Image 1 (tube, helix red, strand yellow):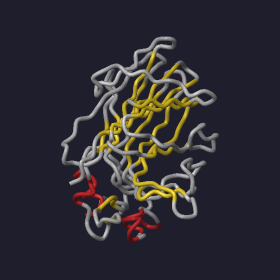
Image 2 (cartoon, rainbow, N blue to C red):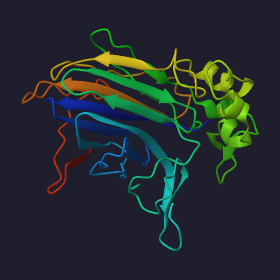
Image 3 (tube, helix red, strand yellow):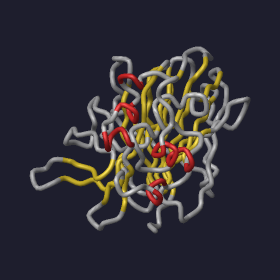
Length: 286
């Protein structure tokens, strides 16, 4: 079992017209988060970045916003200089994904953030398969947390498994990706909630991560909402078994504009995150 640690991401609201996403890598190796903005809106100023072990990054975004995050692993440039990743690659050939999404299998964090204190929607999706455990944990008000804390790779059937160069399972395909059959993809005559039911394969994902989407119509137990305002605080953390593998942990937190209430309960000391001149991202290494 690999000795993976914790990768944190914080989502920080700053006022009614902007939001900041803060990622922290507690893993003992580099990861490469990716971002994708939906709805035909302009992409964020950073669509992919390298995040060293112990580093933090802040990315400012407009509000409202909808999109997704994921984390790429085992990335490097090949002999021709093309940037590629073993899991969740976006196929851009660069660290920046430039509007391209994660190539399955990939664990996805999906969010729609409303303006002016409206209702936010968020979920963790394994519809495109699994590569990392994830968590999104509101911690105040009536907002509920959601997570996929288990390392599904450890129970992935051989026919769904993606193996790394050392032969270990590094990702787990969805049955739709593996077999491209309507009953697994919820297409054709199976293209509605009444005709597309859980399968033996999707139930493997669901048994490991009960709160995450395991197939396309898994809405009832997997879509979460939160109603907030510019000073509504929500954030949190997840605990996990050290043998469960790598964890991409998302924290969400709202700030009063002009006040710094940012905190990371996983850290023993308070962090300072410095801004990178000329960009709206910040990186810190401990």
